[in-house]
View 1: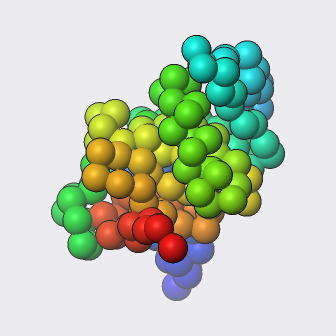
View 2: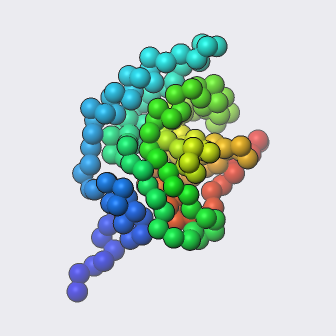
Length: 162
């Protein structure tokens, strides 16, 4: 009997990603570089600029452009649809910069969740965060963990001041 647990993601997460158009080996570096160029070229009215780094470009190349719906009820919270589109954070340079300074890292936009009610961001080490009106949340040490948490409705960790 074949081993059913050979996918990179849990079965329900893998299914949701494939339904959105992802497949193992997906890699659109041309689109990722386009997003990187657009973010680098943007300067906010107050002079803030986006950070672009390999972890962000790699996440955009593999998952960029996906609109992911969630398959059912979540483990802890209701999962919400998400979209991987870094340009959704184009005008949030200051928010990303402020959180990055607080975390002592650089952040780049990754996409949105909950119909653009929350911004997803990735840091230079590949860790993923969500920023919404209720606060800032840690979703996982890498894109795989973050997608799994978002799709399965796993409660994120709230970031607090030290």
